[in-house]
Image (cartoon, one colour):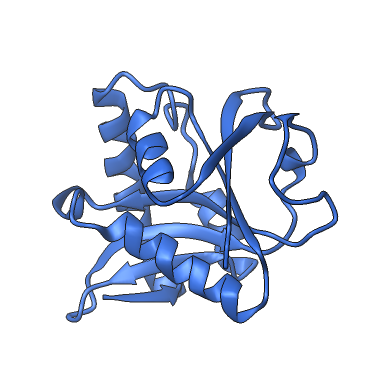
Length: 170
C-alpha cells in the first residue's frame, strides 16, 4: 500500500469511497455525513490545498482517502475541555477519512494514522488532533486503541457537536 497526495484523476474514486462510508454510517444509524457532506466541492478544496491523500494498492486501486494537514483547524480554537498541547503549538489534523467497503477492517485506517504521524515526526510536530461524531463508536475505539486521548467537545461551523481527541507524537 501507498499513501499518496491525491491527483485529479483520483477524485471519482474518492467520491465513491465517501459514498460507501456515508452508506455505512447510515446503516449504523449514525447521523454523520448524512447531509451531503463531504461532497465533491470539499474534496476539490482539499486537493487544491494539497491536503487530500489516497491509499492505493500495489495495482493502483484507490482503497481509502483522508484529508491531512498541519494548518490550524479553526473549530479547534474553542474546546469544552482541554487540548494536551498549548494553543500556539503546531499540530496535525485528520478529517474526512474513509475506507472502501471491501477493505474495511483490514487495518487501512491504522495505516493512514501511521503515515500521517510519521509525517509529523519528520516535521518535528508534536501532536495530532482529530474529532468524530459522538455516535461513531468505531472511530472512537480506534482512536483510543491508537493512543489518542479524549480532550473534550468542539463544535463545527454548523454547530454540530464533535468529540475531540489528541495524541502526543514522540
